[in-house]
Amino acid sequence: MRERRRWTVRDLRRDNRAVLLSSLFFEQPLSRPDLSAATGLSPASVSNVVRELIDEGIVVEAGSVDSDGGRPRVLLQVNPDYGYVIGVDVGEIRVRVELFDLTMAERAKVDYPLDPRQHDVAVIVEAILAGLDEVLTRSGVSPSAVLGVGIGVPGIVENGPDARVHGQSYGWDAVPLERLLRAGTSLPLHIDNGAKTMGQAELWFGTGRGTQHAVVCLIGSGVGASIIAHGSSHRGSTSSAVEWGHTTVIAGGRTCRCGARGCLEAYAGAEAILDRYGDAFPGLDQESALAALIELASTSERAAEVLDEAALYLGVSIGNLINLFNPERIIIGGWAGLLLGERMLPAIEAAAREHSLRYSFAQTSIELGRLGPDAVALGAATLPIEALLSGTAFPAFRSDRPAS
Image (cartoon, rainbow, N blue to C red; front, side, top):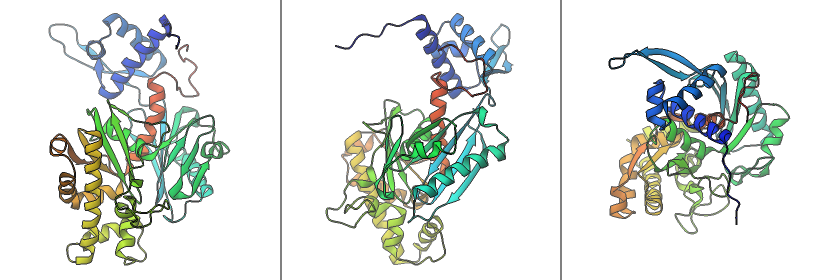
């Protein structure tokens, strides 16, 4: 039998701080009475915690609003320059590195194109480290002001003292990514599955905001998904999100990059779609080639056939998600998902309707993500934000951290 945890005054203070800071982060600006109403904390508790946060510099006053018959209410917001976070998207066609302030406004961004057929670990590590240096230089932000770096990667993340990545489609087998990056940076690192970081971005800031149950589908060169259950991302026993792209849609079908046959990714991933059509776009990168194929579909029967096939298998697999998870929303994102969705969403919805239970389908909306191709990096940057909101992350230069 597990021993029950004994709560202390310090625990209560930490929890009150986390609740209040989270409410302010997502709904700012708010007044003290607004915070009391939103969090259920007493006005006295709110005043005490706010005083601490202002003294630490994490919260600042942001003007005032008139109140009914009383003194104007002072508005509060998170200080954008209290610290900074960096998000990294390790994708199939690029490594993207973005630096944000604490309002999640982008301050600097850099991309490093990748050959979608080559994902050597050394190349990825070099791109990430170069990107960290570049966004700090462009933004003028000191490394000591960075709360942490979130990194969204493909495959399964084995968390522990030394995070390892199992990316079968990349040829990565227990790659000690955190240790390799530690050779070039001392910034705090948070490594997670890229589909999951995109799911968190959509949950916090995008189409998933306000939902309790959703599935966020990441479609790029490959295919993945993130399950949102009870308002938070589902992790499973490892941080692999949902390897939806490697569920089977045709037994003994086309060979997937993972080595299995008949995976959804072998029919609906951008690399597979272009391969199915044939090498008709020499000199174009994968993103430009898929855009050209979609444009060609209005005049080419073959192009339309290939895209219709992709829409069919996406819809069938989304129908499976609806039957399995009964979500409020299915959100389609990723650079290829957004390109395909703009043209093929009605066909995807029709296939999902045919391959799911009527009642479950009626309870689910299928929508495109709002955050564009930056969603994975933005979501990765929320990983150190989570640590800040819980009271476990502070910029290195801060000397006024609260007692733990």
